[in-house]
Image (cartoon, rainbow, N blue to C red; front, side):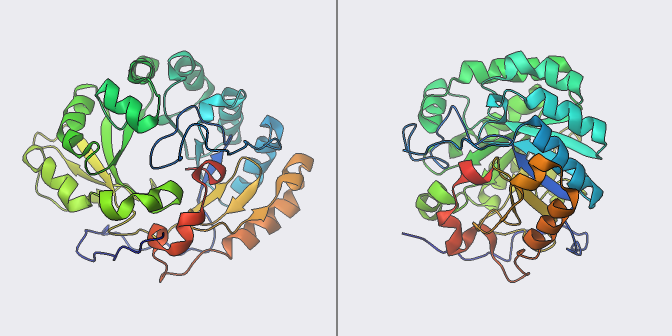
Length: 339
């Protein structure tokens, strides 16, 4: 069953003008659809019957694809999955993208493999890293991830801190009756570690469609849980850094972010493109539409990649689109598309 949650116009929006969406400036590349966790808002079970793709792009193909996208105006790249650190060539992908030259290079991970890879990733040129962590309670963490080890994740975060990344952020999907009582605790912990915590509304994508009607915790409720820690200012986005909105701590030394994909969608002005692990370019997380450029990437056919990019970008919904609250979002497989 697909639920439609109304958009709440009362949520704050960024003060800067919307981006003219003539071409993508940001791309999220899903280097693998494999993952060693099964978070309740992403996968139904660890043995959900999903068969990982056998025709994933290799390091050379990713190099060619990203080069062609950068030539067409992409300036920000985020590496995702599945779990990107399960892709054996992830460090080399980082090294090559850094050599291509982009304004911003980041990676999102569940940190299960990060303890061993933090230093190599940093040495290869990775600037920023986001870590998904939905609880600081080991038993709760294991339940929400269906078997994930909080101890391994925390070890990965410590390794990332030691590696000296420009910035470390956390991503926490807040679910009512699961972890909504940990917003303040996670915020305080992250600030103590020199990390920027971010809290995400569960969205109606794939498995999330079964949860977001009854378990969504909206921006205003999340912010109220840390109101005594933060200034009472309007939340602001970081320029060219995605849809998250941030407020500062009362002492001015920290920030906390919120991503409002359900109560206040951020489709207007979206400048993001996604590339799946099999080389399909997709212009929207909430739709399965896409253009397969895998053969062109393997051949190094820049002209075909550019045509594919233009065709994929033409699929971008207009400003009336309501993102992850649209009914099409429920049919999207987050592992296949890339988070």
